Amino acid sequence: MFDVEMLRRGIEGRDASALRGLYATDARMTIVDHRDQPSHPMEIAGNAAIGEFLDDVCSREMEHHLGQVVVSADGSHAAYLEECRYPDGTRVMSTSMLDLRDGLVTTQSVLQAWDEESQEKGMSAGAAAAMAERLNFSTPDEVRTFPHGRVEIINAAGGAIGRMTLEPGWRWSQDVKPLAGTEWCEAPHFQYHLSGTIRIHMADGTEFDAKAGDITMLPSGHDAWVIGDEPVVAIDWQGAMHYAEGS
Image (cartoon, rainbow, N blue to C red):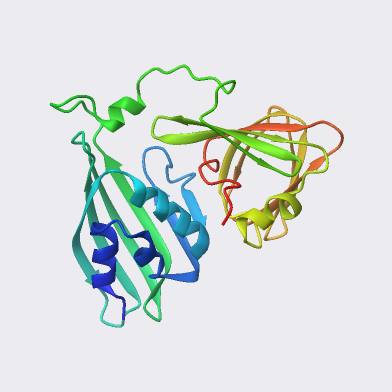
C-alpha cells in the first residue's frame, strides 16, 4: 500500500529523499499552474528528474502542510491536498492525483496556485514575480560548462532562465549525458533559438531541426546535436535550473 506517513514526513519535514522513495523508476509528474498552463504543462519524467525537482522544492524556505489524503480501496489511486507558506506570508495550495503501482507513484498530476497580492508585511513572492526587472547575461548568477558548450543562468521571478551556447560538435548524448546519468535528456525545455541549427531527436522517433527565430517546447526524453559550423545559442525558460549540474 501507499505509505501515507512517509508522504507526510517528506512533505512536512522537507525531506526530498523520503519523497523520492515514493516514486517508481519510470514515474512521470505533470504540473499545471498559471505559468505552465494546460496546453503546455511542466512534464518531468523518471525518478531521477523528479528527485531533482523535489530537491529544489524542499530547499526553499517555506512551511509545508499535508492536508486530506485519500487512497482508493484497491490501492491503485490516491489524492492529497498540500498547503504551503513562504516567510513573507505568501500561501501556495496544490492538489495531486496519483496513479499507483505496488505502492509507488507512477503518474502524478499537480494543480497549484499561489497568492498574487501584496501581504501586510510586504510584497508577496507572486507579486514580486510581476515586478519590472532588467537583467543581463553579461553578469549571470551561475555558469556551467561541459564539453563543447556552456549554460549561463540568471535567477529571476522565482525561477531560472538559461542561455545555452553549444559549439559545433556538441551532442547531448556525448557531452551532457555523462553528467545527467540518464539515457535521454529528461529536462523539459521551452526555448527561443537565437542562432545556429540544432537537430532534436525525441525518444519516440520524432526528429526535426530548430533554427534562429524558432521556439521549441520539448518534453522529457530527447537527444540533440549541433548541425553545421555555427554555434547554437538559445534562451531556455524551463529546463535551465538543473541542466548539466551532474548527478
